[in-house]
Image (tube, rainbow, N blue to C red; front, side):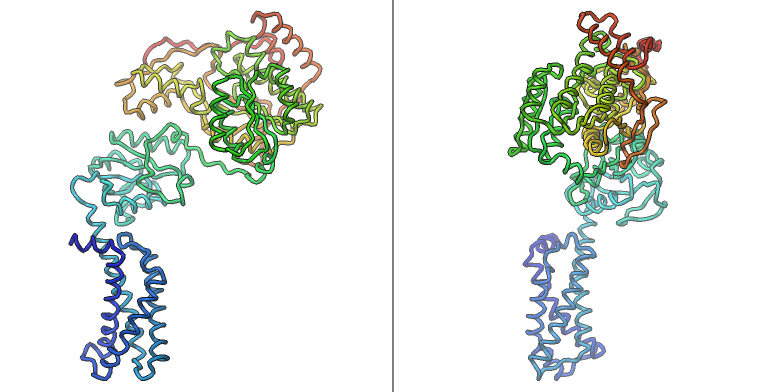
Length: 622
C-alpha cells in the first residue's frame, strides 16, 4: 500500500489515474444504458470510435480547470466541486464534438449523462478514500493524545490541521466547549463536556497535552481557561488571535506557550486608520522620551504612517542610539532626526523646535518610578512638571498643531510625588489650552506590561534567580494593557480631541499583582510556594492598594471610540495656578526637597493631603 500512496503524491500519477478513469466511465455508461447487459455490436463500435475524442476533450478540460492543483491528502468539498465542474464541462464538450465533428458516429444521449455521473464517482471516490486512509494512519502508537479547548472556528481548523499532518506527533481525541452540546462531533471528534470538565476529561481520556483554541475571549474568560488547564497538570499551548494569523488560517505551527499578555485577554483595537494616517502623513512629528517603553513603540507606529520627519527627543544616549538604529533599518527612506537632550533644557528644546517646526508633539518623557521619586521630589518636579512646561511653551510659540501629553492613572487622587507631578502636567496643558491655538490633549492610562522598571521584568529576574518573588501586598491590584495597544489608542486619541480634553483609556479589569506573580511562576514551569516562594514585603512609600482612572467629580463621557473615554474635568483657575507654580519653581531653585510635597499638592488643589497610608503587613511568605 505504501508504494500506492507514494505514487499518488506524484502529479503525473494522478493524471494517469484520471485518464484511465475516462474510458472506464465511458464504457460503463454504455453498459448501464443497456441495463447491465451486453452492448449491441453497433453501439460498441460507436463507443470505441468515439473514445479517442472523448479522451482528448476530457483530458484537456481536466487539466485546464485546475483539477490537479488539489492534493489527494487534503481532498475536501472544494475538490469535489472542482471535479463536478470539470466533468460537466468535459462531458458537454465531448457531446458537442461527437455530434458536430463525428456526424456518422452518434451516441445515445443518455450515455453522456451516465458517463458524467460515473466520472464524478470514479474521480472523487479514490481521492476521498485516500484521504480517509491517510487520516486513519494518524492513529498510531506513540502519538500524544491532545484535547482541544474550544470547538469554534479556531478549534475546528486546528483539529483539521492535526488530522492532516501525519508527522506532527499529536492525536486529537476530543473537544471541550462551553457553547457546544455534549455529543456533537467535529471532524469525527466528539465534544465531551464543558471547559469546567477539563480535569476530569484529561483523566478519563488519558490526555497528554491541551491546546487552547479560544482566540477571542475577555481576560476573565482566558484566565479561567488557563487556570483549568493548569489544574490538569498537563502541558498546554495556545493559539494566537485569528486576526494575527496570515489569511486567518490556524495551524499547529501557530501554537505557542502561554504568555502573560494572554491573561489580559485584550480584544484587538480597531482604529480610524484613515484619519490617523491623514493627521501624520507628511507631517513633522516629535516624540519625547523616544527611547523609553511607550516612546519607542510610538515611534515604531508613527514611522509606519510616513511622516515627513520623525524627531526622536531622548536624554539617554544608548536608548536614543538603539531606537534610531532600529527605525533606520526598518524604514530606510524615512527622515529621522535624533535629538539628544533633556526636556527641561529650554535652549535645546527651542533649538529643536526652531529647526524642525513640528506639527505634532507626543510627550512621553517622564520620571515614573513611584518609590524612588518619593525621596527625589525636586528632580521629579523639574522633569515632569517644568519639563512639560518648557515643551508646552515651545509648542505654543512655534505654532505646533497638536501637543499630546501621556499621563497615568497615578495622577488621580495622587498619593505620591510621581502621580502629583503628572497631575500638575495635566493642568499645565489644560491651562495653556485656554490661551493657545495649539490643541493640548492628555491621555491617561494605567500600567503597561513589560515597561522598564515595571513589576513583570522584576518578577522574571527573580524567578530566573530561583526566587523568592516579592509582592508588596496580597490585595494590591493594578490595571494593565500591552504597550502596542496603549500606543495605538494614543494615536487614536490624537485625532479625536478638539483641545483641552483628558482622555482615559479603557484598561479592562484590574488584576491582582499576586495573581501575576503566580502565573509567571507557573509559565516558567515552576510551582508557586513549592519551587519558587512568594514573599510579601509591605507597601512601599507612595504606593496605593489600588489605582483610579478618574476623579469622582470628573464626568466620564463616551467618545466615538469604544476604548477611549473623556474625563470632563472642572475649569482651571489660571491666576491661582500660575501663582502657585511660581512658588513651586522658587522652592526647586532653593535646592533641598523640603516643602516640595506640600507646594506640589497645593498646586494641584490637594493642599495638606497626607502621603499614602502604609497598610501594616508583616514581611513573610504567603
